[in-house]
Image 1 (tube, rainbow, N blue to C red):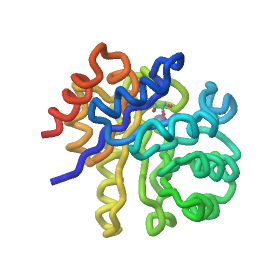
Image 2 (image 1 turned 120 degrees about the horizontal axis):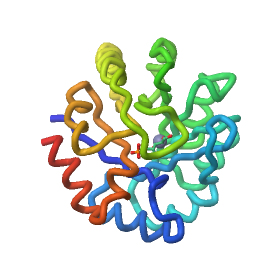
Image 3 (image 1 turned 180 degrees about the vertical axis):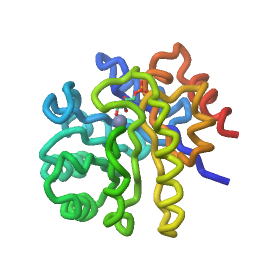
Image 4 (image 1 turned 135 degrees about the horizontal axis):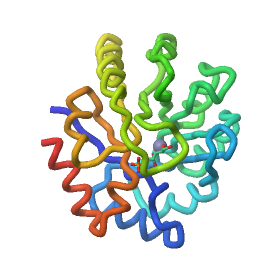
Length: 219
Ligand code: DX5
Ligand code: ZN
């Protein structure tokens, strides 16, 4: 029995009341809080810095799952770790020395993960699988919430699940982008165990209902 996780992305929250929004999804059954960090450089959008992470930290005991779409990665990752992050994922394209970045994240006390863009080959996992805790497959191009799930992602999810199984390690396979009640079951069937969802949760009038609906599909 897979222990599925739902990670609401606060990218789609109402920023004018961010604390209440985090609290609301935590009470509604979220398993972690996904924080999309965008720098207007690696991706064409600008969101949260470590100070926002630090303000959210006292609001919930749930793990803070920081998805860095920013460059350079190393110093920023350390700042997010100090600000209370539990998991930090980054794009290998955004850092010069991937192995060093993984080490820096782990030395800061966080779990480290690699993010694979829609057009990035999974070959980049070859030499890091013995170290990382998460593989995050982007099922949209990073930068914005509310985009449509890219159908080709299913094939990639299946391939990565196989590679994880062969590694014999406990690595979470997270998928991010365009996930909703219609497709979450198929994404799980392809091999995902962790699901980032922004608009399908924060766009709903009832967060509890939205998360329950996603979980229901996974039964
Ligand atoms: C995109 C972000 C996603 C995004 C998901 O760059 O990494 O986390 O917020 O939002 P939805 O669920 O709306 O696609
Ligand atoms: Zn994300």
